[in-house]
Image: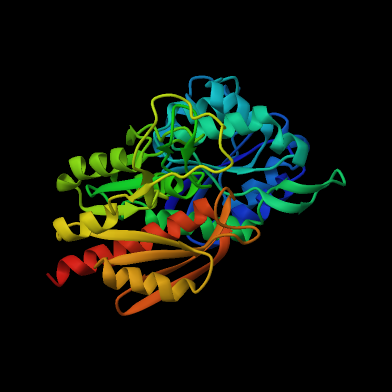
Length: 400
C-alpha cells in the first residue's frame, strides 16, 4: 500500500522544485495530497499539482465549495507524514509559535503524523539568530529537517539556504522511513559532550567536544522508536524533549550516572569525549599566578565504556574513537581491548569535520567488518549510524 503523504508548498522561488518532488513521490508509490499557502499559488499553479497527483489541491482553510468540511481535521487524520517543501523562514517561525492562520499551519497543529521540512530561504535569513532559534525549537519537538543545501541562490547570494534537490529529498525521506521503528521498545543510553575536571573554582581541564554528534544520535534513536536516556556533559544544546536527560560535569559524575542506569538498557553508545585524567587535588580557592610554572598531578579517570562492556555483557556496547592519526589502527585496538560490540571512528583536527563542526565522516567497525561513511551532516550521519547499530544489535540477539 502506498504511503500517504501531504506535501505542503510555501511561497518561495523554490516552489518550482516542488512539482518535480511530487512527481518523484508519486513514481515511488506515495499517495500525495498537496496543500499550498495563499502566496504559494503566485509561484506555481495548483493545476500543476492536480495533474501530477490526480487529486484536488488544497489552498484555503475554508473552501467555499465545501462550506461544512473541516479539511484540516480530515487531512490530519489521513496523513502518515507531512513534508513541507519549500519551508520558508516565515512558515518555520509560525510553526514554532503554533500559529494556525491558514490551512497548512492549522494542519500541522492538528496532526500526529511526523513533520519534515525542506527549508528554502536567503542565506542571511537562514543564518539569522531568530531563524536558528526557531529551527532548534521545532527540532526539539521532533520535527525533522532535510537540508538546506549550500550554493547559488536566486537573489545572487551564495551560501546555505537552498532547498535540497527533489531526488535528495526523496532519498532522505526514504531513509527516514526505513529507520522508523527500528528500535521500537528498545532502551538506549547515550553519553554526549565533554566533561570538565576542576583545578580550582575558576579553572578546569576539558576538550573541544560540542556534543552535536551525541545529541544527533539521541534524536535519531528517538526517531527510530527508542526510549533514550541521555547523559550529557556541559553543552550549548537543548535536550530532546522525549529523552530522559541527566546533566553532569565531571568524568566521575558521568561514570556514576551511566552505571546507575545501565542495568535496564539494551544499547549503550559512548559518544561523550570523557576526560582521560582528572586533577588529584582540587583547590578550594583560586590558585594565584605567583610562580613561573605550575605542576598539577593528574589521576586517570574511570573508563566508562570499558566498565559497561565488562560488567553488562547483555548490553550492546558501542564506543567512539576520536583520533588525529592512524584512525583504523587505534580504533581496532580499542574495539579488541575493551571488548566492544562496535566502535565509531572519526578523525579530529581536520577541516569541515570533527569537534564543533556540523559535519562529520566516520568508520563503523566491528569484529568482522566495517562500513565507512563519507563527510555529511552529523544529523544524517547519526541516522546512518543508528541504522547499522540496530542491524547488528538484532543480529547479536539471534546468535546468543
